[in-house]
Length: 324
Image (cartoon, rainbow, N blue to C red; front, top):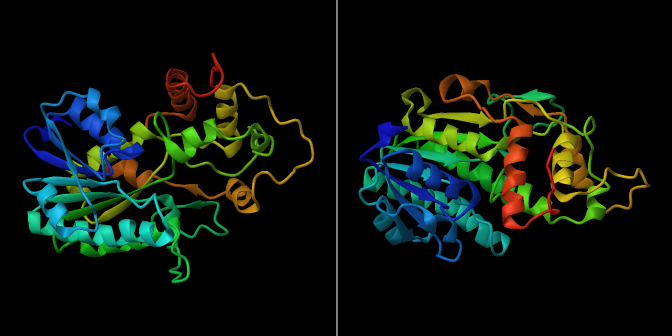
């Protein structure tokens, strides 16, 4: 990791869950100069405690070539974590897809050497599969659907198509990313209603949970920035074990001090589309990332224990909730 010493790395979405952890690890674990690109300063307090001698912030609008050009000037490498998470669907599409196109153009003009794009496992169509790797069918394009999965799939297509005409490209496709400061799979679950947890799976039930602790994702990001053999390729990123969704939700029940489900008749608190997600047996095979980049190290038990420690500090869950 110290191979980055003296270089400058820009991180988009630096105030978000994964982007923020990338910034933390780059500042604390390497000698790189980090340029944190954010939409605004409202969520950067987490990063204010870091040593500031190699950390600079830039406000950036992904829709603005001018602001992107200024932000990337002098940068050697880029980690692209930003996506549209606010506003109407058209606004989110513009940020995720059009913003990615603008970023690629700006990176080329700035002479950036490599861009690592953080995508998602959701760009694959895993219908009917029990396991899949990077050769699995891509999610079919649907012009009438502009929600998250289609946004990320469209952005990934742009990124992969740009390889060879600008920076080297590496695409990472993590699964269910959880950990301190996490959103959908951490804080949203720690504040979810107990009634919904009554309908969520328990250990031994539910389909494949492609859970990956945030630091294992960041390890893959750091390796992807430096590994020559990664150029132009995409990599699924998963945890080292193979938990079911029940094990994941039981860990969260432990953090919150919630009992196991009573077995009462379902009341429909969890919608059918979400229940279908938790029933899917499709497990991501991340062997390619383990071979070329780095092998994941954090088991679900270890990751949930670290998350529980953070949750107690942050005021989530039950007092003294122990995790798994």
